[in-house]
Length: 488
Image (cartoon, rainbow, N blue to C red; front, side):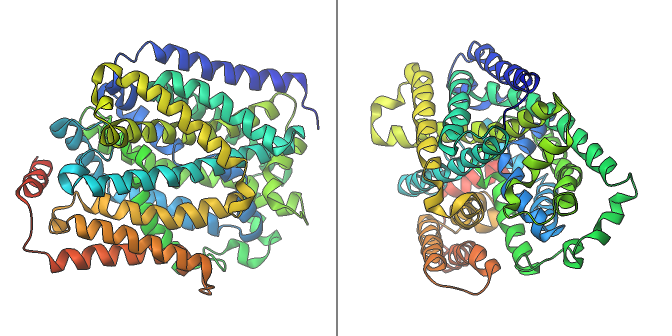
């Protein structure tokens, strides 16, 4: 299908705004600290909005739209609700620790403190593992947006991946974190407007506000249940723990939002804002997806439901706005991820490879080159996404299962309770978690919950158990660090 010229103009203006923000942000970056953590001057409301929109992408409108079509309300429970809950419960814990680490230990990357907390080999294992993992995760996001482009315009998936990835590559490389944050805010506004428009139009199509509850009577009974096989209570609990690790800093880009906050209080307020948005906004966002089986019954490919709803229900101009919002979601998450991975590579990996990369005079140029090359790598992965189980396979099976083993020693490492967990505990937990992931990929465990949770469960048990066995061995530098970040 060819889009109306007005829709194309709307999309074009959106991308022009993103590029202009990138160029403007280019001149705000005087050094690597500006590029990676916005100079530690990020206000709480911008940080909270960015933390929220950076936590999901256009994949929500593809993979999760398909699950909303087939499994109904359960997708909100195991995804949005568990995220919002874990962020708000931890609002006065991990955000505070991240700010103290920046202020008292001058970190710019979420992994810099790991040299002191553990040692260089442990930090390098986590840095390399996380960077490789993000190649796949971000590649899935490009593939998701390409599927939507295919629905709207008919262009092939490879071309869609190159378009979406290429545009983002330009402004991310130019602007650093300021570009990411400001484009996140612009994209949030576009997303809110487009989401509300879609919600109102679908509600009108179904007969008005009565449809808010009456809709479920027109759907299979299990679609209204909070848990719908295979997305059971066990699966939700597994994702609750995975999200606890991910959204408090296990996803490094989200840790950066807290690291960049000027004070501990502002970091906590940012967490409360992000968590509240996760509890409320998805109820509006998902409603058209839950209603899709009534409006578009018998779809062969439910992942295309949101795109087709947009084309069938919205007038000219608004279609372009919704498409722009789908791009906005993906660009928020991917640009945020890429900026943080660039910080990890520039601040943690490259200096360990060669002392030449410790020169602060060239760190900003190194950061931009790293950002460009890493983004290019994610695009190449996206072009091969079918080999990795498709978009949903990459997001749930690969990312969900692998983020835990990396996040466990990272987050638990700042909690004084686990001060005896040293390098041996950290490395063992990562390797055991990865081994468990290999098991899940080669053996049928008979449970999606077990498949997703086994790596993080085994990683957590290994970390705690080895730390317990070494409870009398706590280096002075570790004890001093934990005491320092625990002090008010």
